[in-house]
Image (tube, rainbow, N blue to C red; front, top):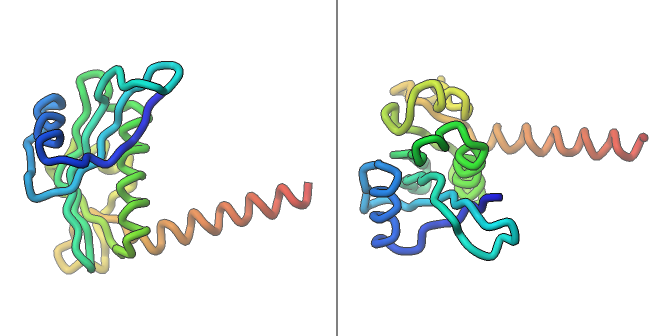
Length: 148
């Protein structure tokens, strides 16, 4: 079992970055993935850390790092999606990821592609389109449940 949480202090963010072997970016926000006990009452380990910045027009993921052996863990994917959801709720239309934020195969697996609307062709996701597609899929699923 795991949990995704925002990091609420710079000191903790620095400690988490050190634990996962990532550079610490003091000018960023961060979410972390933690492994929990079976009863979900205590953290038993750190799985990963995602550091990012955001402004009204866009967000940039600076680093996604995982503990050795957790790189392909579902928790890391969920952590990236939690950051995206947070940004979407903050009405940030685009999220980009720095090319050295994580290995290229993982960045691609998480859905980041060169955006045609970005003059620099940075790797990103149009959050409006992403969440519109998710909502449309959920509505279709709900409709098929009603017809069953």
